[in-house]
Each structure stands twice: as structure tokens, then as C-alpha cells.
Image 1 (cartoon, rainbow, N blue to C red):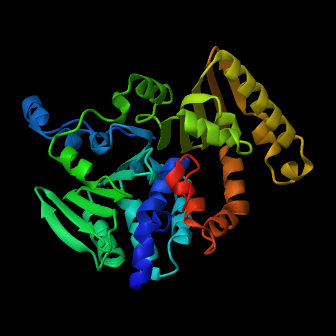
Image 2: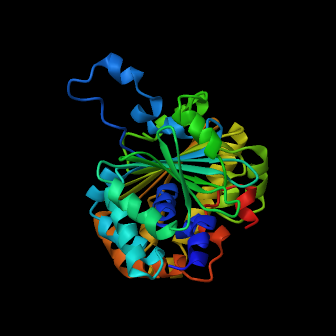
Image 3: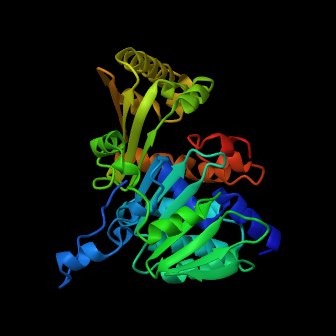
Length: 363
């Protein structure tokens, strides 16, 4: 791999094996870490750094978006082979990089991602796995062979030169952290036990997340707090992003067992905003469901089953597919989706999630 490509890999995280997993995480949460086992006492457990018990403690307290991936649950899904294929498509054409990407998604047991609303859309991603160390060492060898390596306390840090603010940090064999667009000093403070709380310390953020079983009942989930600037950005976008223009807190999860189930919940700014969003969403769904082209694509029945309910300032929506529908759609459109996402002319801003703030939009 050339040095230019290595630099692009960290500058444009949407093209690295880690961010492929991150993308899958943000697009579509589950599996809290297992309780302390064996002879370890409660006192001993409490004396450990908070992040060893709860990896979310490594994320910035002021993250406006948090995503969680339960890799173990994801691998149990009957549709995981499609995820593997998609990740290989998203990885660079080099066979070695595809193998690394596959090794990562097969060994990440849990991932937490936090995004701060800064001028550069700072992202911190924590990946954990009992057998993750070898895959991560292969990653840094391939993608960051020219990086400087330093050790600070228990943190081993790989960081590219030329003023790069991206880094990969190894805290222990099963815990690695990606820092993109800044935030390394704050991360190291958290590693040493500093910092105040985690993103879900915000009571409303936590309450919104718990409504969908953010970290206990589904393999993939995301929760976010939208500020005035983000809502203003969404208001100028097309559907479906424009539907978020009146949202305050929002969470979503994807379950993939016997078919797919997508649950979304949002606290809108007002009851009127919730009612207007409900009406707009129902209208959009109805319009698409009656479209002949959509019917030919096999999506009409799925759209007609979408449930939307507004109660006061809260709105909930649920979309499901059967196992048969899911397999049919993956067979018909899976390869096309992978090809579209992995186009070489796609800009980095297009590969990042729509919720990333201004820094991402300018890239």
C-alpha cells in the first residue's frame, strides 16, 4: 500500500476497515459487557478504571451522537454473510486489506462510537474483542506503517506525521481506540480516570436510548441530540432528513434475526412538530408505497407495514421485513448497494453519515 493511500486511509476514515465497521454501526445497538465473572470481587471490579467495565466511559462527555455495535449478536444474524461481503466491497481492492477488514468484523465483539460537534466532527471509536489484538496489529501494520509510535502510561499510540490529528491507541489486547480529527489528549485523560461522565450521563440522552434497548436488545443502535444548527441544516435537506428538522433527541436500532426490524423514537421540540412529522412521514410512505416502480422493486408491502405514532411531543416508528423479504432484497440489490457505496469517485463527505456536523460537510 502506498504512503499516499495510507495517508488517505486516516484522513478519510470512511475508507478504512475500522470506519467500515463504524459506518455499519451508525447506519443501523446491543449487548452490554458481561458482568465480572470468576473470583473477582466487587471491590476489585470497582477499583478498575471505569472504561474497563464500561467502554463508553472513553467517549467524550459532550458527544452529540453515540452509536453501539454488538458484534457477537451481529455475527449470529443469518444475514451476516452479506455484511462480510459488503465490508469486502467497501475495503480497498487489495486482497490483504480485504482480509484485514474481514478479520476485524469477525473479531470485534463490541464497538462504541462518539461524535463531538466540533469544527472537524471529532470521532472517537472504541473497539473491543477477546481475539481482536492480532487483527488490529495487522491493521496498524498495513495502514500506518509510517506512523510514529509512542507509549504514554498504558496507552500505546500510533499517529501519522505531517500534523495529523488521527491516531490509533492500544490500551490492552482486547481494547483499541480510534481517534479521528482530534481528541487524543482528552482520550488519554479519560484513560487515566479523568473526565466527567460519559455521553449517556445526560438524563434525556440516556432515557431516549433506553426506549429502544440501545445496548441490550439489538445488534446495532444510535442515539443523538440535535442542536439548533443541525436542525437548521436538516430543514434545508430533502426527505427523509428534513423530517428531523423538529427533533430534539432521537434514537434508532436495527435488529436482524428472522427478518429485519428498525425502531426509531424521537422527542420533538413540540407536540405540533410531532404531529406534523407524523403526517409528513405517513404521506411519504403512502406515496412511495403506491408508486409502480417501488412495487416492481418489491418494497410496497414493506412500506405499507410501517407504523408511525405520535403521542404528545414524542414520535415512534417501526419498519419490518420478513425473512423471505430480507433474503430476496439482499439477493436482488445487495451487490448493487455495495458497488454504489464503494464507488471510487465518492467523496469522503458522502461516505460519512448525514448527522456528522459542519466539518464533515466541508470535506
